[in-house]
Length: 578
Image (cartoon, rainbow, N blue to C red):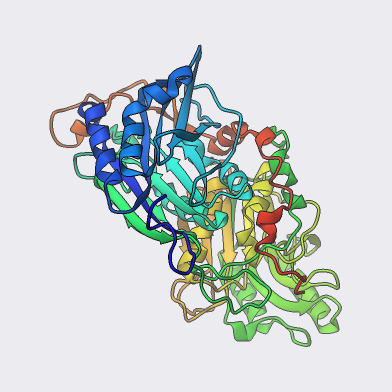
């Protein structure tokens, strides 16, 4: 056991390292990889070193300890845990396997890659388990496992405190979606994440499919803390990222009875998780109706909190903006989470005025925060004729058995409200049901606008749907009302502290793309300039990423997700606060 492991206060203080290897045929040698591993292992007080996935190395299932001998010797020499990931040959089966070697060089545990994209030609493992080291509980993911949030949720519910992501360069490097996902994986799991990657020896440059450029390797091996902030990373270079981490350190918790002691504010989900049931059920592509149209002008409103709709008042400013919105001719408009109750007579008058605006504009209108006697916040939708056609309560505070959706005349839509942003498998259940547009009326303003937006982007990326969030104006310049596309990019945003409406034209038939197979026309590799990056192995771009990802999920492994266990209960107050 490392001398640095226990601090004077009994906290587990560990030294973690992530290795970033250089990509290239000349670097696929034991001499190079072992050299980088030893450089990391010899760092003072080393407790865990993580290497990226090295698919050019193989060990045999029935001779694992001897085949991994050079790595085991390093772990034993420096008294550190060492995680390696490579091909495992097991008879006719070929697995991608992560192995954890303990401080004596013995195999402490292993994980086989459990999910595969179309070009992942391997045998899949059938277990999502954790391994207990002498300093904490570890779970590992390999390569494209990263694109399946269910894996991380299962590992966290089984107690993982440190998550590993060991990757090798994909044939097409689409890194724009990685940054929000990396933060979300850690924050959603309340766990540190160690990501180990490769760097191109040449300057980093992104992909450009039409030009034949697959993009340079990401680099950026990193250690991410429990709320998704990199605390050590290699940048776009090879090298070693090392951090000394107190696994037990928490902030002072001002919310009595709540476990709100992370580095940043977050929402404790109190719901019973039953509504996430579709995540653990067999999936077929949902049948969608024949929509009247597939393009829609989507609009979002921002208001000052002083103009919130409350009992005893009419939503005057909201109605003014709806009147102005007529010029934009929107198909659907979202306003934020207000604070009015349906049993208030004046609120009922407001309902009638909103219905009138919907009829006059010929637009759907969605408004949040319109509660009833059972739920403290409900998102309600009026159709183009002014009929109240759909409502869904806020989920995180209380929960309910099943998610709902509504088929408009242009797309399948649904809602999550405010703190539901911290219930990622509510959104996953909506995607399982075929939802294409999620509306988020929100009063959320913590921890800050940047993290809010990052999580919104991650939900859109994971589920390949459009996401529209209406926030209240704030002094935080990063907190805006936004329209986000299925690639996690902000397509429209309101101005700072401006009461206004912005819109974006969405084509719901334009599906998010993915890459597989091999493109017919392969640009020729050159000796210099951009062509020197070409691999002559460019995959083909195809539409339909969500169906591709969802068809490769493995619900039989996710049975724990719709349940509540001791890990979940750690983040709930003993008494329901509402």
